[in-house]
Amino acid sequence: MSKYDRLWKYIADSGQDQLVVPFNAVEKIAGVPLDHSFLGYKKELLDYGYQVDHLFLKKQKIQISQIK
Image 1: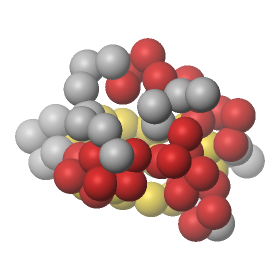
Image 2: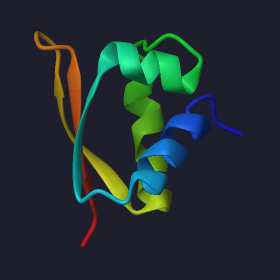
Image 3: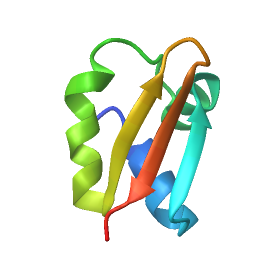
């Protein structure tokens, strides 16, 4: 079980084609602080039919899209 499973499920359950999720929302949904290890975990999102398109570090947001 991944520490980001709750986040991945939230994204998949959204049914949206594209999402922009603020860092603080990621932490609230996942229940763990967002840290550098997220870069390694983001590939797990592919199993849910989504991908991380971009991390906006200055804006503190993550852009995610559904894989077509």
